[in-house]
Image 1: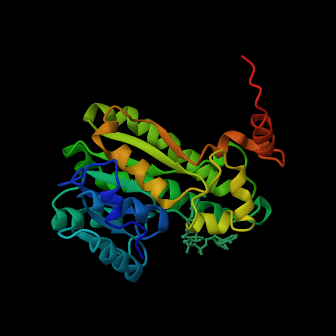
Image 2: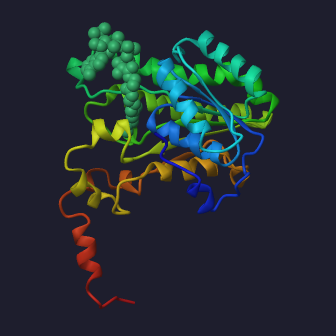
Image 3: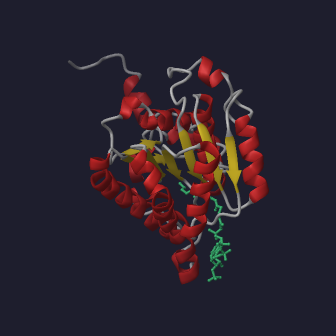
Length: 289
Ligand code: HXC
């Protein structure tokens, strides 16, 4: 089910037709994070192709997203494994055949599970790095001629895990660090062609697969540790995504947009005394000049 609807446009700071005439190509578009990104782009005028491994899931999501805006065209292309560049190239061709072109690319397909290093096989590590990092590379490789033709915009879906060491996530942390490096290199290399490349790094976003796997227990209490005092929402991801694709970000490339309520800056400081000590200090009505 879609998480956004027409009220996103009505109550938005963005113009309703901001992305009219644009076409987005999105891997992982049937998953929660990437799906809301597509919903926002489509609600604001874009057409889209969403790419996934499971044809039923992908086609169902595409039909639901298409229904969000009268006149929208959203196609679901299933049976595509981002580890296979030829499959992505075929999906890119189908997108151009059916929707005319590709302006925006979101490389979002990802795989994750919790595993300590001792129980993580070489093949398991390789699987996640291949889906997340090689899959992101393949996605840009397969859409590059369209990006070049249309002076397109790339958005990689990263994370904050690798800013410090997160246990049971060595495979994902390594893959996401590689994605950041890939995006930075592409920003520099493809900038002269008019192509921008950025990453979005979601923190704990409620209602997503990553959240259910990694946060879950104690989630009510946990959100008090976030500086902005709440878990993120999929709408927070949608808004940041719209900004990065919009002309408002036309001089923004090679950046990593963290959307986590300030959480990662706390690092190991997210102990029992935060944020109570801040609240306590600010409850004293005796500010020093
Ligand atoms: C340890 C595991 C494991 C687990 C699989 N493996 N699950 N090892 N603990 N829980 C091992 C397998 O034993 C195998 O190694 C290797 O990984 C490959 O497994 P396959 O099932 O053959 O691979 P495949 O079918 O390609 O599946 C890939 C997958 C799977 C990543 C393992 O989980 C998947 O397809 N996930 C896609 C959906 C997903 O995960 N979405 C979450 C996105 S959330 P051996 O040695 O036995 O051969 C997200 C958030 C990240 O990414 C950031 C959070 C902040």
